[in-house]
Image (tube, rainbow, N blue to C red; front, side):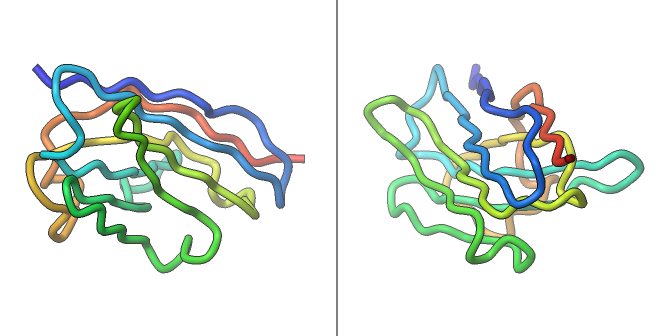
Length: 124
């Protein structure tokens, strides 16, 4: 059974940075796509970024391009999301999720295994 464990959330001031981690167990990153989603209170879950398994192709939502970077460390079986220039509207619970193969359309319904979620609060 695939398992994901997120860490790295917390409180950050506007304009600040955070790095989220998603540690995978019971599977290897090469064969899976890993995506980050977020869900703010009262809003739908939305895709932030995705990285395909073996080929390592990355995708970003337009609203994070140039500010967020997704990466992976195969030795640690971990995917990271570096978030810079955060603004208060990005306060949300951030989730990582995985599915076999490539990112494809990387809609939330495409992913069948999810982490527990990690709160990110951007506030002064």
